[in-house]
Length: 91
Image 1 (cartoon, rainbow, N blue to C red):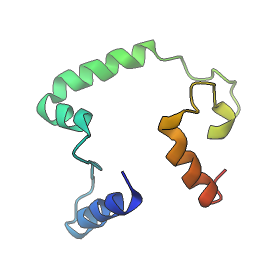
Image 2: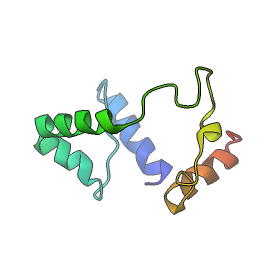
Image 3: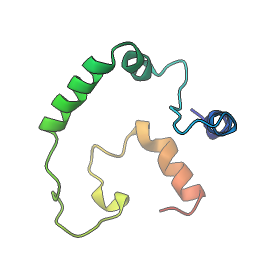
């Protein structure tokens, strides 16, 4: 999703006085699934949380996101995020 579409949804939520907004597009099937099956989604997320590594995997010191990269974290899926970070001097 491009930043303008996300910004429109955020501004609309602010104007309506909503305290929470889920940024969505027509391809976001996970959000639609969560709306239809909230309890099942919660159970699935709890299950996923059990298989994730525990906190402190890189030590107890704070680390920046780019310091936590792995060979799996840089892919075509994260290309737009990396480009935006460079554009906004966030790297």
